[in-house]
Image (cartoon, rainbow, N blue to C red):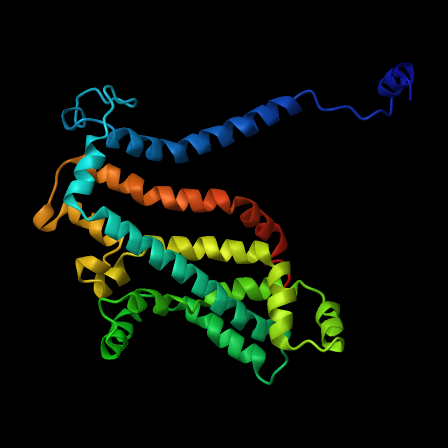
Length: 294
């Protein structure tokens, strides 16, 4: 169509025209989104700013959003006061091992609930799903008694194993597995494959977005856990970051230096941010592909 024809079509009485105030609505929409993004980002920016300020500038009468002068003394003080390398290593090991184990266990349970026919499957799944309504504080004491009887207090298995069994993770992956057509596994069965082969070579590769989403959520769960590691990791050698950094505001190492506290918060937030940035593509794809089919 030539330019003259396009102009005549636009000038025709029945031509579709954009509403004159549509751009105003779009502008307001994006303005609201920008404001909401700033509301979410300002506390993190202030946390970083405080961690870079010298002690004498923290409680100044005129707050400074951009530190002048900026210094890394609070981070040096933090690493001098606390065994940060050990706590970082503990948190990384617990979070990575726990996230990997939770994804594997949830995937196996989800495969049994979604792709294998057995008597009472739906009833068992509903009962398992009902455990999500039980607050974790209710099971804290019985679980701790069990861990103590097993001799897992002050151990990595005590920090990791109780969190491997996740009703939410099973539900999330079950919904993803249900979205796959049955023809795939039927063709595999004809070729002589068993359930383990189908699970490992067909189901898991096709549901990577859901697996990545659960991995990120599990990593965040283990990384931010405070109450359970507080009970189990009583020795400093097994202490994770949230438990160790809580001592900055109390106990024998009590501090009133908020720049050191904010430096610890920055160190805690960075690994979660990096993990989410790496898995962002899979996370977005999982939102659109999983959890749709009931």
